[in-house]
Image 1 (cartoon, rainbow, N blue to C red):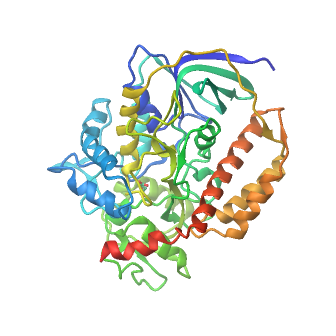
Image 2: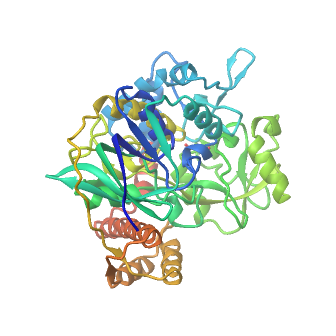
Length: 477
Ligand code: SIN
C-alpha cells in the first residue's frame, strides 16, 4: 500500500482536553493537526465526571496548593503546583469565554467537593457530565487553522539529527507519514491497557512508548492511581467522588461506615480509600441516602443505575485503575528533553501530582499546561525523512492472552510473579518489519506495559512500594 503524506506545522497526538487546550492557544499562523486513535470523543476528558478544581472564588490559591501537596504526601513539586493552582484560578473564566457554562445555583456557582479537598472548589457542567459538555464546547471553538483527523494510530515518531520532525501512522489501515515542525504528545494515561478501569479503551500508554523510542526521559512510571469507586458490576463505570462530597458514605453490608477511623472519613485521599477498600473482605457500598436531589445533580449515575437495575441509594463499588501520575518528564512549559517534542496532560509528568493526584486537578492541568505548551512550541525544519519500524509478530489470540496477564499485575497490589512472567513472555517475542495497524497497536500496548512493569519492578527492588502507606499516617497526624 502506498504511503500517504500529511504536512503540518504542529502535530498534536490526542483530542482530549490537553490537546484541545494547546490547539486553542497556539498562534493562528500555525497549521495544526490533531489526531485521535479512535473517534475524537474517545478520550478520558470526555468521560470526566467530577469536574475542574480551581481556587477561582478563593482569596488566594494557598489552600488549593496545600490540599494538592497533602494528597500527594508532599511528593509533588511545590513550584509546579504553584503554577497549577495560581494560573488555574483564571481557568474557569477563560473556559467560559470559549462558551463553557459551569453549573450555577442560587447565589453563584454550584461547587462540588471531592476527596482530600477541604473546600468546595470543583466546577462542573451538567452535574456529573462535565467532560462531555466541556469538550463538546471547546472542540466547537477550535479555529480554522486546526484540523482534526480521526482513527489515526501514530506508531512511531520520526527524528533527524536528534530532533522530532514528524510521525509514522495509519489512518484506518492506510500508512501515512506526517511531516511536522513539532509534535505534542497528549495521548492520556494507561487505563485502557486493562479491563478494570475508568478509562476510555483507546487510552493505552502510546505516548510513553513513542517518547521512549526517541530517547525522551520517562519518570515515576510506577505511580498509578486507583479510584476507590467503580461500579461493582460486570462493566466498570466510574462513580464520581463528588457523590461523597455531596454526602454519600462508604459502608459495609451492615451499614457500618468503613472510613469512620479517618479524619476525613469517606473523603480521605483517594489512594488511602482505594487501598483500604481493596484490603477489605466483602462488598462495599456507597450509601447515598444523605445526598439531596441525586437525580438532578448526578444524572449520568442515575441513568446508569436505572439501566443496570441498581438502587442508587446503595451502590456497590470497588476500586479500579484510574490515573497515571508518572509519565514523560517535562519542564514547566511542557518541553521534553528531545528537541521538537512536547508532552501535556496525563501522559506527561510535570511533577504536579506526586504519588497521588488530588481529585479534579487533572483537567486543570490540561488547561494550564496546554496554554503553556502553546507558548513554548518552536518549529524544526521539516523533512521528508521516514522511519522503518519493527513490530511484534504476534497473533490476536496470543496478544489477548498477554493483555489478560497485564490485568493480573496492573493492580493496586501487583503480583510480582505475574509481572515477571509478563516481562519474560514479551522478551522472547519475534519482531517483523511487515508493519500493519493491528500489529502496531498491539506492539504499542505491550511496550507500554513493559515500561510500567520494569518501573514497578525497579521500585520493588528499592523497597519504595510501601511509601504511600508509610507516610500516610505521619501526614495526617
Ligand atoms: C471523579 O469524578 O471521581 C474523578 C475525578 C478525578 O479523577 O479527578
